[in-house]
Length: 147
Image (tube, rainbow, N blue to C red; front, side, top):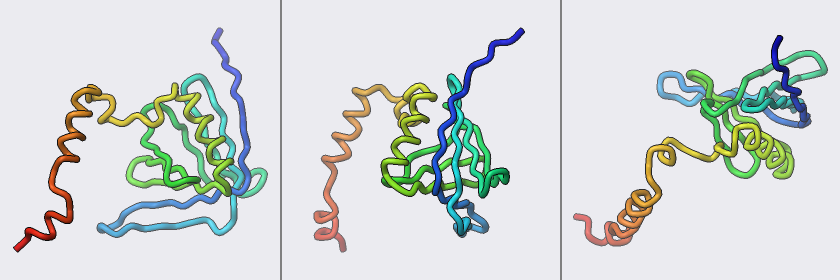
């Protein structure tokens, strides 16, 4: 006997996929020319993302959970890093992106925006750090005083 969780599936048409990696210190980009159909299936603590070029051909698939390296990029893109390469998902509109992003936040326990800095740093020491950082010399002062 096992426990089965019903997975909710949401579809986003018109998503572009850009694979990003670095080779010999150079950023390499490859993007599919045609928009893809993104399917996101969510469970209690993970999301399963699949991109299809047509009804049956899956061109990319990954699971996203709390341990996955991922982040919002700009107003309508999302990046996921798997191993040594990353993929950028570009949504056709901000509304579509925010719908996708909220689905991910909900299934990952609202911690999508947390960083290692947030996890390891108490709020009071973070405030002190940024206050001391902002009191440092401005760039204008630096430019005026350089040799």
